[in-house]
Length: 381
Image (cartoon, rainbow, N blue to C red):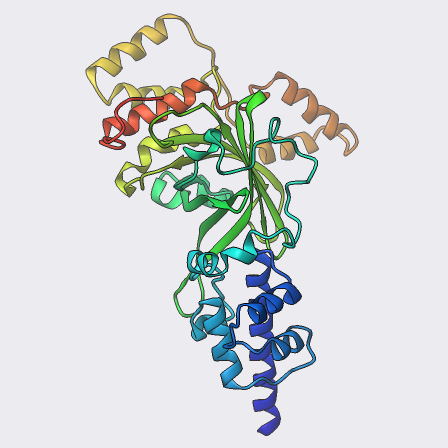
């Protein structure tokens, strides 16, 4: 019995050590510089010697006073500090305000932004007038990267929501992306993926880049169109995202669209933003059934569909790749199959690339304006 208790204690202390490590990592602090800062600022609630030894594994059984001191120093609740489902962003802003001095010093760990980047070519300073109108929280929406979820007609089930916060961080612009995974733990609490990283503006190509990572090892790249704003803050933008699919046993590189919006979109309005999150192109491929459903929505739509039909149309085949492969295997050798699939793709309709144009950004904004969003900013910049 005593052995089991001791083992349980060690498991809790290891969880605390890992959670504190997450906090140090997201704030880009090392044990030594944080402890020196606490000593110099006479922050005696946390004993620097014990903290150093605990983080280095030399102290394996701290007392409750030490855990309470860590909770106080890092501004997180004790329940959160000892939790396997630790939330390192519980009091993120409060921590940054308390330790602003050390967070803006040059002895932080290196960021994604290298020292050679010129402020004239790559703008990272939040004080820049170019970036100031983009520094704010955004609500974000995109299709699930799990095929079984994104194929559903119900947008409330197929769309993923989250929050992207762009903020000043010393002389750099930082981004934190918090995504609701739609999964829950054994206690019914929502599980989140929280990425953090840098924001870089490239004026020459008019684009903003967010280079993000998960502490446990995963990158996410967000890029959206930039235009200079003189008065209002940014209302919404469509972004291209390069990340990894979410299916646990099928973690593949994936590209998708994301809507960044300063206002939270009501769930009943998700169907109006969902079409803008698809990989659209100037060529529209639609089935006969789809056109018929569109025509039934109104008399005006019916007339438009009828006129579209007068321009002539081609019959299209929509068929699963797996079905094609199964059929082909009856007639081709394994060596011939990849060649046939390549030839098939060369004759099929497919987008060669996906572009978020000014028109794409304006269209999604206009449909949101029709629903009453952004009413305080009625002049589009």
